[in-house]
Length: 262
Image (cartoon, rainbow, N blue to C red; front, side):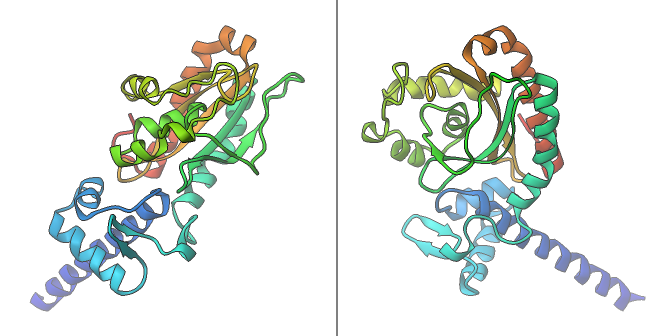
């Protein structure tokens, strides 16, 4: 009887360890830069000693690499490992996009942040209306003048903000694109507080949109959900579009295991 209790305890410990390893790999699969021991411990809500042991073990086995800034996935594993968080995200978000486009009658997108600090759309469902906003999944988009990009900026660590908001990176895409780093920084606390970001004509003349963050199991922002529309129609439906995008982003976050999706 005693030996059975020991075996059960060992099994529980093994399952817990395996779960932490998978959680850690999923965390790195959606991060855009290196993470240190303290950051991993905070994001995973585990002791620093446990985080350090996990990182050293995975680095020793080649599943992580280390540079002067911290740990990250090897190049060949970036972009979503098999069974990773990105696949889970798409399986949940793809049907939701269709529902959002049907309910709002505007175009819906889900996107992520690349390691280079650009926005990449992963999937979309376009508006059923003849006059509509649409965007290719092939092209990257700037972080500073898209509502998705502002969501990512609002939840980014300072070291990434400093890199992504360098004046030399902030091109004026349209006549209303904001290119002053300090002005953009003033928007970020409000985006975090209200749970969404908006852009009007900042990336495409005549097109506006709203985005909300999608949180992963470690409560880090792993993606963003967006509704985009012609600006004149966006203004008329603004409150409804904000409500839809926040609601569905929260639903996806909960399905992904986020403890607090706001």
